[in-house]
Structures are given as structure tokens and as C-alpha cells.
Image (cartoon, rainbow, N blue to C red; front, top):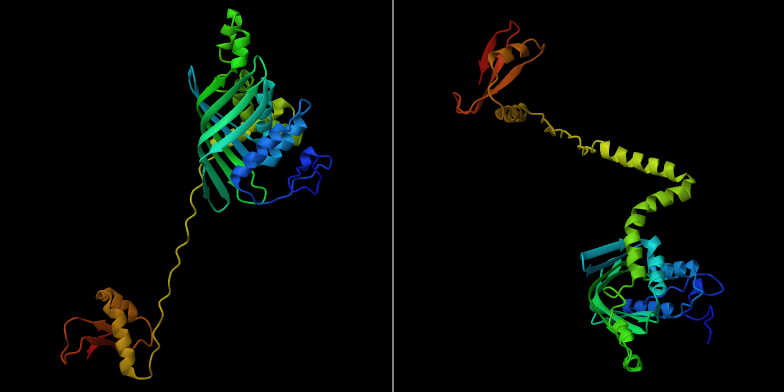
Length: 331
């Protein structure tokens, strides 16, 4: 039965209406099941538009795909961006693969504010090869997926670490060529390297060059510049960022707090007490300071507090200024 736009599992990028699939919240593992079904619906006529629609449905716009494995010449790690992901899946089938699906066992899910992480230590990527010979390849490893926590639930990061792989040949094929040593020798040779075809490995090596060129391609597409001008512009901007001095951290201006003045009372005793408390925290003023205060007209008395009690036992006594400029001590 053909799918219709009313079908909840209808995905419009592959249908005649070209609209996005209906958003709904499902389990993260079920999204992998849907991806397997989408890969099984691939045909030999699937072009680049089909693969772009496939990546749009299951991967975020800023998604990354990482593969880690170990070859004869050492460990390898390749990371590609969103624009190169569709081509990666298409190269798997160009290398002779007729079927591709993923099996997740005993996966663990962890929920965050805006994402869901799926960690599967027993993940198997199964590929069915039709050429050069009929072979089933099981590539085992650890798969870590990060989904966006929304209605679309698309993949944000994909990290597959390959540990081992197995190539399985049916017994019936071995029985058919039991009397042919050359065919048996051909069947004994591996057709993949760590479960990946030569088409995929060559593409991953090419991505090492293509990934840094994404900025040039984007600038060429946006501003319609020549490749040489795009390269000059990118290099000039990177040079500006390198020679630009680091931005100094902004210092917050220090705000001075104004001391609250105590309200003076109508009585002379309270006024003298407030004056004594404010002067008690300072050191004794020298004689030069007292002569300056004598120049202020109308100044009656300057407080002079001491820790030693005065004649009547008070802690503070004052010095009066006479109109002639002489000082007269008061108690």
C-alpha cells in the first residue's frame, strides 16, 4: 500500500508533495528504525536530491558525523559536516552494497535540557554486498548519538567507533566453487577494510580536504566571487583575527558610597556628640591644619578628641577660635 500525506509515517521529501514529515515525539531508537526503513526504500535511481532529503529528515543543519577505526597504518578519525553527510551514505552503496541497516542492543539514554544522548556499546552496522561477491559484513562498535529534544528529533552528533568486523560468505557459494582453487582464493580475501568499502574510505580521505573548503564554497555561493578572490578574502580575515590584539576585559567603574549624615538635633549636646564621633576615627590634626581653619570666618569651635579624659572626665574637649586668631581651649 502506497503512503499518502495522511499517513503519520509519510515523509514528503520522497513523495510527490515535497513537504516535511509530520513532527511527533518518539523514542530515539525508533528514529534509527525509521532511518533503516528509509535506506531500504532507496532505489538505483536515487539521485543527490534523494540523499539531501534523507539527510534533512534525520540530521540537523549543523550535524557532524565522526568515524573512528584502526587500519594497518594506525588509528584513523574522520569528522564531516552536514553538507558532506549525504554523499557519505551514497558512497556506501556505490561500493557494491545493496542493503544497509543498524542494530542497537542494550543502549542507554540520557535526557538533557535540549538534547537526548543515546550510548550503545553493542552497535552493529550490517551491509549486504552484491559485488564483487555475495557477502554479508557485520561491523561492530560503539555508537553515540545526540538527538535534539524537539518534535523532529534529528541527529546532532553521530560518533561510531569501530572495534571489529566479520565478513560472512554463504556455504552454498563455497560448495559451488569447491573444485576451483582460484575462486576459493578469491573468496578468502576481504572485500572491506574494517567493514568499510574502498569507495567510502577514499571519500573520507577526500573530506579531509573538502571540510576546510566549506567556507570558500559558501562564500563563493553567497557573494558570487571567483575562487581566487574567495581564498584572498578568507585568508585576509584570518590574518586580521591573528594580528588583532586580544580584547581587554572591561573594568567596572568603582562607585563611591556617600556616607549618610546624621540629623542634627536642636540641642547643643547632641551636636557636640556627633562632632566628637566623626572626629574620633581620625588622627589628631597638626597645628598647620588648625591655622587653616582659623581663616574661615564665623568658625566657632574645632573639635579635638582624645582618649585621655579631660579635667572633668570627658573624652572630648574643644578649642575655641577668638576673633584675634588665638586659640582658647574649652572643656
